[in-house]
Image 1 (cartoon, rainbow, N blue to C red):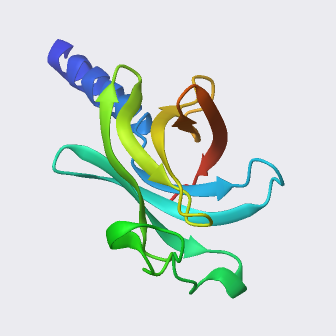
Image 2 (image 1 turned 120 degrees about the vertical axis):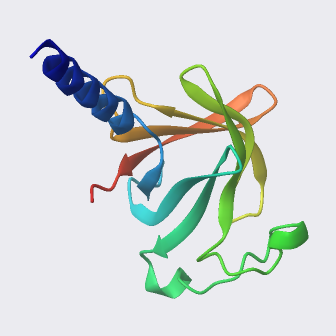
Length: 142
């Protein structure tokens, strides 16, 4: 009976840890207008975290290319574009990677962190030197 209770505890604990993951699909919210813009899927590849645009809500923007992006992302369709790259876990956040704003092609140093009070809210912060801008994305359950 003791082993059974230990097993139940361990399974419950591992489920709680899994619920705290940033992996999955997130609805992006414009920080100025509050309008829902897209869905980004955050995934792990080769030990690093990436994020790809998998849905765009505005029909008129759905198939636009990233005409302001540089390098290999130049003129790629925004739908399917990997906008979060090379993030690494550092404490309770993910850092040392970048995020691209496909509307203007600017690339920012990025930090991703789950909201401490709400694990279904992701703090997405882009930095240029000492200046930063923060958005809060909402987890899509499913």
